[in-house]
Length: 258
Image (tube, rainbow, N blue to C red; front, side, top):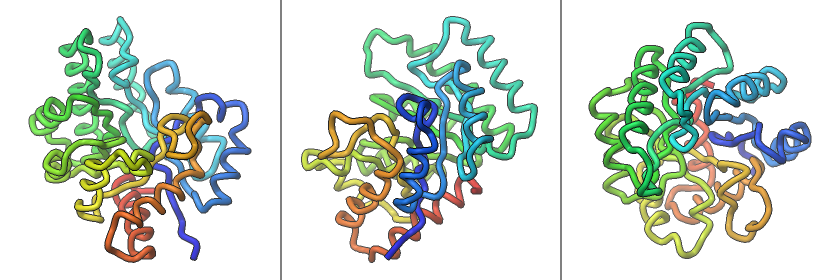
């Protein structure tokens, strides 16, 4: 049985896709992937992701400032981002990739939090969902989201936290991004969490070309692998294959309006 799928997080403007986008899009479409969401990381690829969406049907994009790619002139970059949203764009469906990343203990947390807050406020102003990167920072991300309360919610990308943390995000109107981590035997905590969450709050994503699935290490991840992630999710859940596939597709359409 064939199901329509959506990759809610793939960096199609990155190498190797940027040299062969038609090949990789066709390959994904042959696997049933009909729509793609391409988040940006900072002002250096805002135009690239928008042009990518213009060239290809079924490709949508988000504009944002990733916590690991904040420029030294971040205040000016925030203003440029705000200016981008003063102009309507049909394929621009979210703000992101944004968030917090405290993996490096030497990082400037205050700057990250400031830039994230500004993007949450922008999402609130324009009534758009957020694509949120959160690593070693769930409690701080939750604090900002509780403070600003962006009405359109968003997705917590590449989630690998606890069941309690996931439900805290869900209670704030967010969805949980399910990626290749659930393909690994050692990811016991994450798999248990994903198996127990409400199905109507799960989305599928690859983070291509990063986050390769088990068995595909050493090669760039690609959007066609969404089908493999779906199969891994089916193994974790009690619902039927059809129910799960239809739910994650419906969830994505509901959040992003695509």
